[in-house]
Amino acid sequence: SISDPELFVKKENEKLLISLAQQTGGWVAAANGECLATILLNHPSLTRGGAKSRRTKAEFRIAPNLTVDVRTMYMASSSKFPSLNKEIYQLDPESGKPVRDGLGEYLTYSIRRRTTHYDAEQPDVVVENITNAYPYGCDLIPVGKMDMLGIKAAFSSPACIEMLGYIAVSDVPIHLLIGSALAVVGGKESNKSRVAVASIARAMEEKGVYGLCRFVKTDGAEPVLGVLIPKTDDDSNEDGCFGGDSYLTDDVGKYFILMQLPFAEDVQDIPPSKVPADIYGDNNEATACDELIDSLILPDDDFRSADISTPSIKCFERMVASNAMNPPVYDEEDLQKGQLTESILEASKSVPLCNFDAIKSLHEKAAVKAE
Image (tube, rainbow, N blue to C red):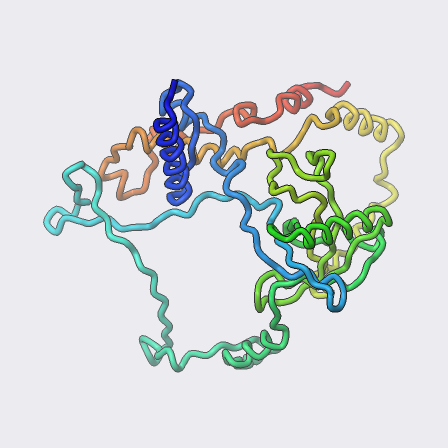
């Protein structure tokens, strides 16, 4: 058995390990007797269940002279490849080949980017002679920094959500909503804020209405129109609070989903495309389409895209993990030409989707031939 001092030291070491992983962009996984290579190559995606969405404080102006503090956070965001650090090799002045250190690794220089402007008369234009201009017809209208600051100052306000009124659900153009959904929850240490958000969300849900609001995401940002949709997480318990595995956590209870509504300039005018009457199908073709769709319908709750890792990111992670454990040795010619070696291709090669946590029933359904 572990004595209390040993247990305390173990817990403190775990906290230190987790904090170091967070500061360095790493992750912590239980070994359970597996070797390091197996864990790195087969672990779940680094982006899956990654760092919590940053929670931003905002004022929730429910009515005149009635304001509470809330927090907003993104419910989903598109995963992308990590940014690469670009450096240049140090070259030997005599041979012109990259220089290695005592461990056999290449020595590199960091790169700095500098933008310069020039015209036909001046190789380098002085910064004071540069101005911004907007096209207006066939002319360019100069616009100074003070002009743009004046426009922003006219709409300057702290981050806030101001309720403008309530509208019917049918009046919200779901197909025209902009951007990712934001969750709006009560303040972390304010019971009044939580009660206010939960009460309004419950009342809106009972009446079947959405909230029309003015939304300023950050201090001084441009205001936009938004719609507040009442929501109760499916994982909430009887007390209306989230369970420990909910990504919102902190016992949020009922909350809002905030989506941006379009202005007139945001809506694209797409002309309708009419189908000529002479190319309409007959009943046999319509029946064949119905049978095709029926054969590919998945059972309820059998498919959730949030349970599937991105194949391209999974390949990228496998390549990085493989190169970290077995650093590739490049030929000087391949290095200069930028050619891929067999080890990189092997580490990042594509594999069936079923190996990327995809639902196997999708493969089975796709394999069924429509009669």
